[in-house]
Image (cartoon, rainbow, N blue to C red; front, side, top):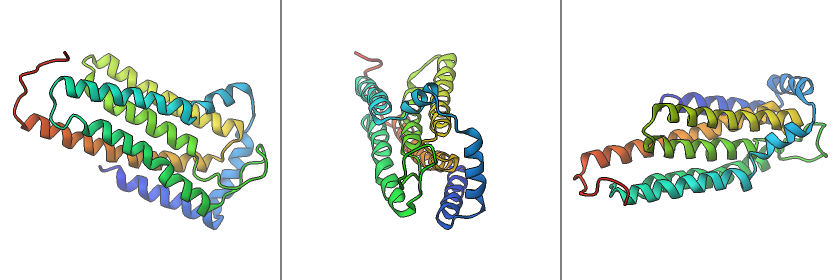
Length: 212
């Protein structure tokens, strides 16, 4: 919850700089020139942020969380998967209007066009992989496996982010803004999961003790 404010402020600052073509965009373009080096590896990494790849991963996590909650008789078992789905749905709802409003052109590495801010691929990766991680963490008993899942999520998001900038599909600020946007959605999901967990622990114990 404490991170929600800083993420919102940082996102607003980056958006203001992009719209106003402020000093940060000058540094952003300079950094992009240093980082852009299109190759096959960067393209493959950026593809991990495609809806066709990231969203099915989330859907599997949603289905498993729903099955586990229902099988164990959890109170409001549907709330965590519904929260994860809502977070994913909000990505295009927020990103598409922002792209139209900011009207930011792409890097020299892509054909002339506008609507590159913020990065939809980055936001998709952050929310899809992040929400899947948040949904699965409470269901895993092994601390080592939980740590591995968190590391895997971070690696996937970092890989997508690096690939998009390296390939020249997005400016660095496009990616950074989507980190903030995705983080805000995940914080909202985390609050939903916490409330659901508190309701379950405070409710009447179910006679069912494990998955059937």
